[in-house]
Image (cartoon, rainbow, N blue to C red; front, side, top):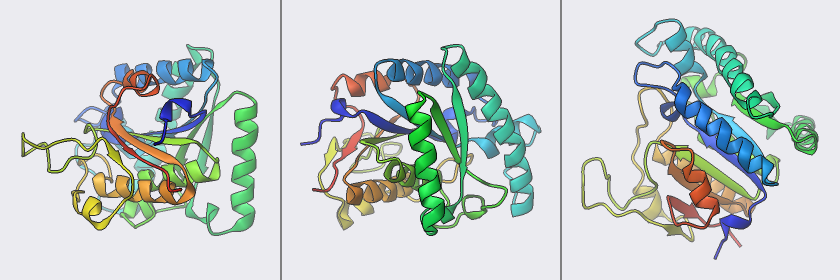
Length: 265
């Protein structure tokens, strides 16, 4: 049985619905708490990598937009505004806890072009060696997969790819639900949380819904897809509710929260 408390190198993915309010503006209280917890976990001797969604959502909030743009070009422009705002927030809040962050923008060629893959791996290795927390997002200006809703382009899948590239021990996906359930808990109060998944089967895949929040691109389906990637790479994956970032402490203290997808043997 996997023991996530022993994980040293950890990728934490945070979604748009966790980072923003319903109106699209940044949830600064939650982001500040997340930065504090990740900084403290790094202080404890762990190596933390943050994969952050939210550029499009924060951009919409900054520009006073209430509806997600339909045109890919407009999405790219809004995400560019949001990415700048988001990194400014991270730089300031992590800095309050004496932590330096580095922006890493990736596109899908990191897994298809060997030289690109090697460069990214070298960058992660050096940043972690320098005790810097990488903040990763997809490069929306040149890579439109996420914005257009293509297969690779959700940040759940990106976070799993980062976990593999960085040779992480654990991927933690923070979302707006407590984990994987045997039914949709939003409509069925009798739904039970599945604490551990030893192997992802068609039955497990069938439990995933299709839609995420209106501010993000994901849903449980993309999270299970991410868990499949980490499972094949021998990396544990855990899905927990991101409403209270301090729950990361509970996870690393050994409490059974969320759903743990165990690494393949």
